[in-house]
Each structure stands twice: as structure tokens, then as C-alpha cells.
Length: 608
Image (cartoon, rainbow, N blue to C red; front, top):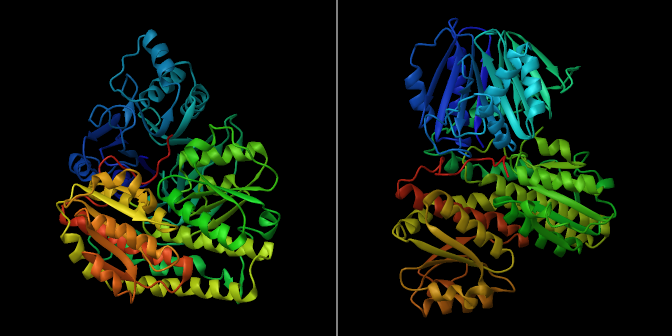
């Protein structure tokens, strides 16, 4: 996903846009650009590189402009380059557009426009928007009407902001299947593809809905639907402040967010555990869960890993069959559902395109839908019948950490709630599981006390080019997650496997250059894991074990051991995730990687 910001009203609009782009840079950082109405036309600045380079290119030239739009890019169409950076303009250079999303029919539109004499100057799908707007302007429409007509021309997803040299007092914004928020400031109206970019200026936010078009003028917002009818959208108050999106002394956002996990999980559980009961309130009402006989969990990446852990929780606690699907496959394989099926989506941003489309299919099929989401008022929260917010707060690091553990906590709440509804839990079992959940934040804090030790272990493996992560039961999705983190931020080839699969192929890779991380907590699979460890050791592999506190036996079978508390049953998946995150972080840090902005990745994947 890319990042959009814009501002109209007051002096210093370009500075507001640049600051917003710096906040959103974690959503795209291969190029950046800005367009401002400067009285003589449009001033366009674009760079192939980071927002800091764009700020240097802008300098003081645009200090007094009152309307500007900006963009930080994660390339989808066209390689990262200055010519492909946004904003894109029409042939006259008097209309500029920034855009997130995918214009699916851009090839047909491009051929049509080229046939009428338009010459393209980029390889992007976005440029078609600028030329279409110009065509409608030349046909006699005003700027808002030209943008609305362009919305009807295109297929796909978009959040766009448009500025014109011939209408310099207005910024036009529109959205379809890609997020866009308006910030209501004093004499200024701001726009951003993520409300994070607005909180330094205002907490009053309006979220646009699909096919909304907004006309922004200093101190005023008008919103219209696709037919041009005026409509109202609710103004909401952002609950957190600008401090939440600062590093606060940590070297990277990822490290800060790892250390925020005890509080984040605590917030996720707060007021949802009452005595020996789970109360999910109106967010996920009892009526939505009553009569559920099957759950299908949809997710991608880290959220899919959380869903696999949730499957184990729900099946064990509520005795309901659970299927975990890649959201990207669910909509294409003609899934079989019935009246007892609950489709449960998991997404940090609430904007993940594949997961949204899966839920939209479920809605068309008429089955009940719910979601675990971190971002309030995201697209997902408006698509489902019920939503459980994780309350992790803003997660800036591209590699998810606190959102993951909060998703697991939310899944356990749902598992217990379903167990209560189906009467599969005795009062003693309910009390034990709730006590376990309440203890998790404290257990995570104990793991974080071992940060120095984990950093020392990570330093031993900086030269590793490959790494295996192995686990059984809920340790298997943790192994997948640990491998993903190492790939994402340290660029080390890493694979997560179910430990029982090791002898079915991966064991061929093991030699004295291959570190193998085992999830080796005590439990009913412990002896099997120990056998797997011995198989690795006999082939020269170096073993790093995530083990239960007090397990002295394992020290004789591993090169390095990271001990964690495991006194909270299946909830130990949350403290067990933390050393995997820290291990990846410190390998990446020692290797000099750009941890918060890993190459080729962006925070939220809003295109399929």
C-alpha cells in the first residue's frame, strides 16, 4: 500500500503534507512526490527515494502554499523511478493526481486515450486518471464532476486526491475499496489514506465510504455519492494522540511495539473478562455466536498464523470444527457454507484486499460474518456483522508484532465465549482459562526481561544464510511466524515447518551451517520434539530452543536456550511469540537492515 496526504487552507499546506508523508512512509517508501497550487500553476516535486529526499527537493520554495497533495509509493505498476512517482499529471500539467489502489481496466483505457493522441509519461496505472479527468474537463465539466465521471470510467480500487491549477482553492478526494480519511482542523481540511497522518493536527476525522467524493475547501467539506447527491458521514474522534506514533527513545518502531505487547494484550482483555465469564458486548453480540456449528477463519500472512492458533483454541475449548483459509483462495474456490457457519476474518489494518473480498463473498452467500481488527472504522469493520477490536494501538513497524499477540488474545476470548455458549466448559475450566488469560501480560513482561540474553544469542547467527523453525501443535504456526519475521526484516531465507514434517524432506538441508529454532515447550508433544532435536543434532545442526522455564534437561540438547514462562496453557503462544520477534529483530539490527522499512514490503496490502 502507498500513502496519501493532502491539505487545503491556511499557509504551510506543503509542510503539512510532507509531515504526513513522513508519518505514512512505512506504507510505501520507494518514491515520493508532492503537488501544490502556487498561484502560477502547479509546482510538482518528485523523487525516487525517501520522503526526506522529497523534503530537501521542496526546500522553502512552497512555504506559503495553501493547497497541496502528496504521495509515498510502494510500486505496483512500473519500477521505482522518478517518472513513475506520484503525482501524475495530464498533458497540460495543470491537473495532478495521487492514487492508491489498482485500476484494473487501465490497459483498455490507456489504449483508448493513446488512440486519441494522449502521450503517456509513466508506466503506472495511475496516469490514466489524470488524462481521464482532463478529458471530462475539456467536455465542459467542473473539477468535481470530472472526477466523478472518471470514477465511473474506471474499474478496480482507488483512493485519490486531485488538485488543479485552474481551481486552486479546492482539493477533490474520492475512494472505492481503498481507505481515505478527512481531518477537520481549524481553518484547514486535511486528507490521508490513514488517520495516523492526521493526529498531529486534529482528532476529528471523517471516514469516506465506497464511491464517496469529497470537495475540500478551507474549513469546509462537502461529500457526495457517485450520482452527485450530497450525503453526510459521521465525524469520529481518534482515541490516541500523536505520542502513540513516536519512537519514544526506541531505535525502531518494531522494538517499541515488541515492548508494548504487555499493555496491548492487557487493553485487548480489559472489560471483556468479568468474573468467570467473557463479555464481548455489542461488538460481537451473543446472538451472532449462538448456534455456530463451524468456523472458517480468513487471513493472510501473520493474521493467517494467528488464525491457525485460533483454530486450536476454538476446537479444544468449544468443540467446533474450524477451517483456516488463505483469504486470497477463499473467494475463488467455491467454498461450501451453511447457516451454522461463521466466517471470521483477521486483519490488523482492516484494509487487506484479499480478506475484504473474502468477507464480501461471505456476505453475498448470506452467512454470518465477524472480524478481529485493530483499526477502528476501517473498511472491514463496516463489512461484517460483528467486530472484535484488538486495541493494540497504532502499529507502525511493517513486521507485525503486538497486533499478532493481540489477535491471539482476541481468538481465545472468542473460543471461551463459544465454549460458554455451547456448554463445553465446566465452571472450573472457565475460571482456569480466564485466569490464564489475565496472567499473559505479566508473562510477556518476564520474557522481555530476557531481551539482553536474546540479543546475545542472535549475535551468534548473523552469518546464517538459511534457518529452519520447527514446532508441533500451536508451535507450528509460531514456527511459521518466526520464520516470516526473519525473512521480512533480516532477509535471511527461513522456513517454518511442522516438526513431524522434518523427516519428510527438510532434514536434507541440515548441516553445521544450519541454525534450527525449536518451539520446545513442555506438554503432550514434548518427547516428540526432543526426538526431533536429537535428529538435528546428529546431523550437525545448531539448535536454538524456546523452552519452558525450569526445563533443565533441554540445556544438554541445545546450543542455546531461551526460557519462557508456560504456566498459562494454550495462552502460552503469546509469550512464546516474543523471543521469536526479538531474535529476528536483533539479527536484522546487527546486519544493518532497515527494520521499519524492509525492502519490497509495505504495512497494509490493499491490492490483490
